[in-house]
Length: 296
Image 1: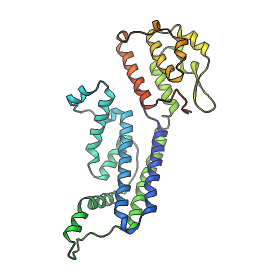
Image 2: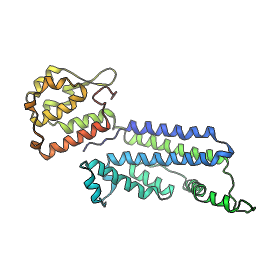
Image 3: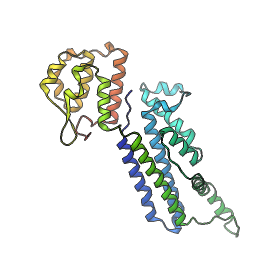
């Protein structure tokens, strides 16, 4: 199974989200503390959700055992990946609608990371968010003409900044834990895993055909060596190799293959059909890996 998971993508994403949450502090005044808090809370929660979505797409075995797939979803697409993404969203939604502390616990458990948070403080933050969203407007209207002890009080900027600091700290610990636990999942690791998955023959060994230039981009070692090797590979390997090379340089296939080398799709067995689908999915996520992206 190819895991479309790159540790650097996650850490870069978290860093970007941290900055967005942190920047909200510089625009906080007493009269806009509530919307600033709701914005920071939303960014934090959506960051957790997106990290879960990315992780479960790469490690779908963490979804559990029991799922119901509706007939309309199966009939809507021939792509299993699309069905999987819908199942992931359904799975996440079951927990994201719960309390923040429960959602964080689900998040830490799913990613197998250990982060200690102050439960009382997280519950306080969650309570404050719910109060603003669900109760404050009612209180403003109900008690607009009378003085009442339940009349909503303004949220102080100092409290808000404390909450934002907690969001940033949790994301920072998450980034550190993921960097440690999943550090092997680099771009180079993914490209090698994909290549090994596609080609089992030693004739197409990755290191015999490819190398990284001084910028860290993939380049072909020796075109004549490749030409010599492809003369002895199977027709299905001709097909799969042509897909990779077409991303790299669309003139290469004319030199390395002839149409008689490429099999009819009906001739592919189930294993090679699955390979073909996974390769197509890969290039949907990473279209530039063989075409100029820095991988190492």
